Length: 151
Image (cartoon, rainbow, N blue to C red; front, side):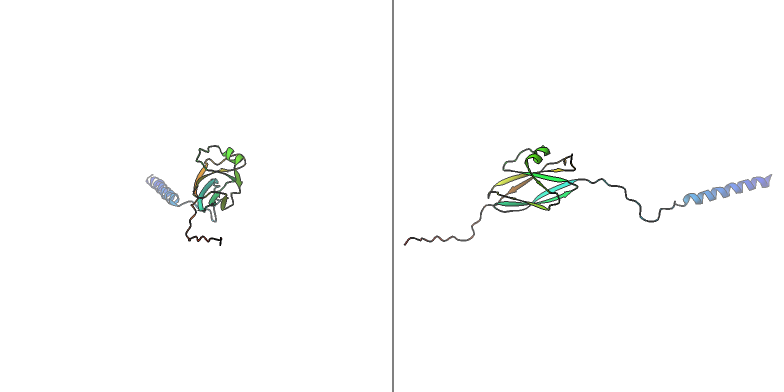
């Protein structure tokens, strides 16, 4: 009986050691590239003043995952809160454009440009962007000589 007990204990110890070794081994990882999880495309829109002269301003646009952009130029600052109004009354531009040039401005004046965007055909970008543009005054750096033409 003593030998049967020893054999049983030996078998149990061998099973425990074998289980311990197998549980320490990491499972095999798949070889090769793993499929990427689909990531949600987050829309973004940034606009900044690139340059301004006495009669025009160029604005730099960075748009990602945006379908369409519209802007309105105003000589007064206002609370533009409705993207639909901007699209109905504003100038529409392609979001792939890197910049937009606004012409017909007056020197030494401040303007506000309001931008709205569409994420897709039926939904608007959450934020209306406001960009302030101030045109410089005319600078006369050369002396002007008046000549009398009457003799």
